[in-house]
Image 1 (cartoon, rainbow over the protein chains, first blue to last red):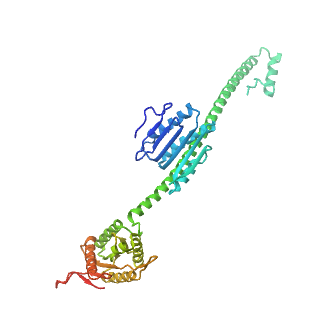
Image 2 (image 1 turned 135 degrees about the vertical axis):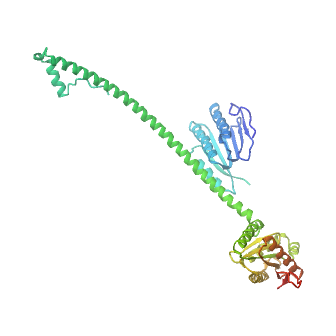
Image 3 (image 1 turned 30 degrees about the vertical axis):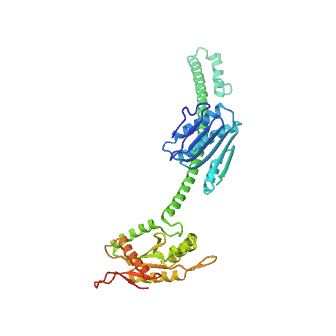
Length: 136
Length: 281
């Protein structure tokens, strides 16, 4: 897992290569975009999610730009689910304060259950949360 | 709430005492001075009590407010956890399904849906253990498609696949539920007849042979009528399934060499030196 130095710092991108138990992460400060793809069941969830949460928090605090989140997560363990809910809660607060927030939940069309998972995450949130099958 | 003045003008006892204290006839009486001092002290105590009550009320209000705050946060956390658990359960159900599919894929032949060699080997090992335990027996039928290569060459591999699927279905249909039929190799099937001795196995082999002889795989411009050869062997005490299989396979080979579309029983080599297999078409 590679990590750009000083993640969470203002203006910095956060790039994590995927490992067997962690997703790839690409947080682009300039584009205002966070992408996560893969599976997440690390032994220590904080190791990966602390950086992501702090990047999101810093972006929301230091800019007033739109944030777009693209997720393609085929498996999450319970701790990772909690961390994702934590991120969504922050996004919800920001959206409530008038920020332009959008989430795109991508799923494999061969696995329709993943769409239901997206629906389950989406529940209770008022920001734009789209659930889309990945085109073949 | 401001403390009520003491003594109170509304309280009959306070009023009565005030009247007595004001009455000149009691002036100089030692009890009157004591009563006055007592009333003064009581008034001070009451004032202090009121102050303590006010402060205490404020603390209680603060504590209540904090409790409400904590309770709100608690409810929020609980909702969050319940959501996480709900989602987690879904992921687990998804994994369980995937696991089942992988299990099926790793133990069954994709083309025919029959058990694959791995599952069959497991089953045969169990059968070996069972024969050791209770002295029961079993028989194996090694079944090979006759001239399969020429079917493939003439009609293509898709037709070859169709033939295998049709054969797999026909063989499975001709067996009891507790028998097993696996795709053992390319065009070879292996059938386990649990508890069957050689004479029972012979009947089953004949039945399967007849079932295959009635099989027609219809193509747009032709009809393929596949045939099979079968080698039959019964487990002997002390043998493992690989030994039994080898004898069934030897019998199969002789069946092939002696004209195909027939079955052959592997039997004990005779003391007269007769071959260890016997044709019984």
